[in-house]
Image (cartoon, rainbow, N blue to C red; front, side):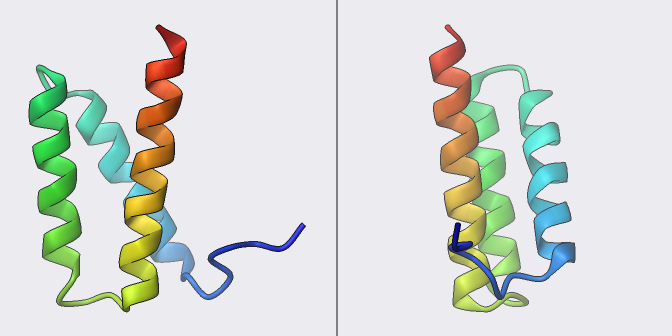
Length: 70
């Protein structure tokens, strides 16, 4: 299978995973969403557009997975 985000560095993937774990610890879904948006906006100054798209994709997949658990 072809990886969609083949050029995304491992450290970006680690940041995405860490940010997701912090988001899950928030008091409510709105705070979690705000946190993830803030993370994405912060890293726009450091990451490539593909890496930012990876963050968005990763967070969206994780949110959808959480919704499907309910």
